[in-house]
Amino acid sequence: MRMIIIGSGPAGISAALYARRAGAEVTVISKGGGALASAELVENYYGLSRPISGAELAHNGIDGARRLGVHFETDEVMAVLPMHDGRAFRIEGSCRTYECDAVILAAGARRKTLSIAGLAEFEGRGISYCAVCDAFFYRGKKVAVIGAGDYALHEAEILRPHVAQLVLLTHGEEPMIEIPDSIAVHTRRIARIEGERRVRQIVFDDDTRMDVDGLFIAIGTAGSSELARKLGVLLSDGKIIVGEQMETNVPGVYAAGDCTGGLLQIVKAVYEGAVAGLSAVRYLREQ
Image: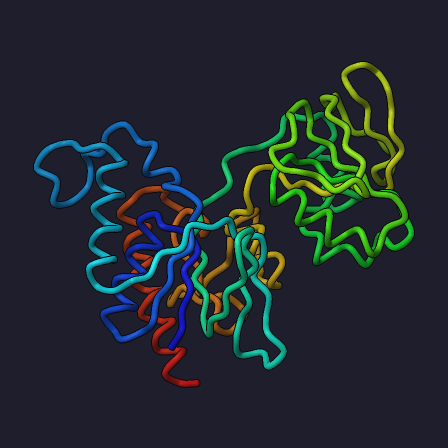
């Protein structure tokens, strides 16, 4: 029973604890501590006799999971894809590829947004957040990807075989990775996105313009919602839709924590993680 949990926050660690105690082989993949690790003090959580830092609470949770035999990988997940048999999954990380029989998405909710005029207006009309979902629609066209890291390059590499022209826009940042010569890079800041019914132009701060047929957003790292889109998991207002057992519409895929919406608190994340972990174990036993 191989299970991979993406995210090492309260939801992910809670899922790992319950799944491991139920006998599953559990791996947690995470790039960093997430929102909890950056919290200065936590004092509204059961069992704390004094306020402690979010980093300390996160460290304690991870230590407890390690003690039970949960395996941890430090990696940035780019995509979760179904295997050919439909009963297993391939996790594409920046360091390596993983395989498992069930997945729990617990990488939190994306909080980093772009403040660019026209971005919200053209979502679904030339602006996409999922290259593997929409690359087909841009065959032979010119597209741009906004981003400066591994995730942006991953999306660009998916698009490259399909499109006629591809450009990476870093929006004022220096690329954090080495970009292949085959991908053009522009570091100018973007002022706005223009078009009529669909995206047609990107206008930069220096008033220069670039014609494009599509624009893919890949800022920072892929959160749970971005990974869910690639799998065909249903979303509502950017949140993952789950049932009472934290199951998604894709068999073997569960979600917990901030990515499901509602109360963005530790107590809610821990509860959902526990339910997701036990539900995923039941699923694996039935296979």
